[in-house]
Image (cartoon, rainbow, N blue to C red; front, side, top):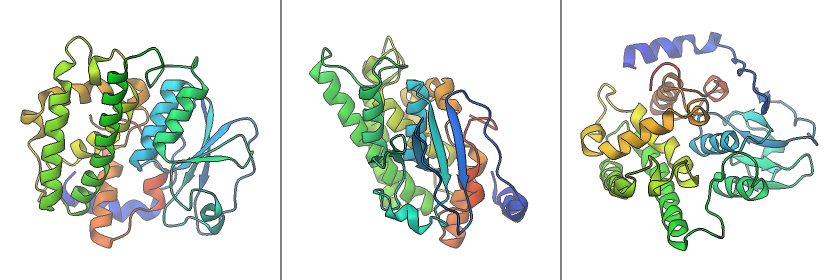
Length: 286
């Protein structure tokens, strides 16, 4: 998306309304927008996830819910208009936040939330992390990959906020992408990290950050990384991940992510309600 199209998108923001998610047997939704919205009533029948769609950690959690096939309620909370009651929750204003069936018990942040889902619902959907019977080496390698995903989060954020001009984030991204390319050398028979047949927690934690980096490739006036030619294994992994409906239906839209990045660069503001409430899902491109 070039700067002309982004300016056109910004012009139309004021007239855009929230878009309803496609019907899903696993998902109900509450949208909280405006400066004075009240806390939603307790939901004793479902887990409840607070977040917004363009946050990479929220995205990873949504993907995990899809793989686990666990019913939940999503509360879409926009960053600039978070109310006082939300800050009084144990999250201290951070997202994602998981609430337990209206019981005033919570888990904050994507990794502990996803680990809980995998351990509490072992027979639902796919297992996302190896069990007691699996190799300690496999578990250690997956934990290392999850650590690299955390590194990628900070690097991609700094890269995008500087419009690709921050030299430290460029160097850090090149180093980490090279490490990921080497890590995929053993994935000969199967497409995912550590030669696994199905995505694990490591794949789920990594895909939001690689997705955002790929969406930034080729923008006008941005310094970009030669990701395509230097990391062919990683690009194959990326395509395999996006081919999965659990990922494709919950990953950031190119149009809205780039609009948010451009808005942040121009105004210093993180996001707007229209960015936060736009449903995820690959549709306008890969």
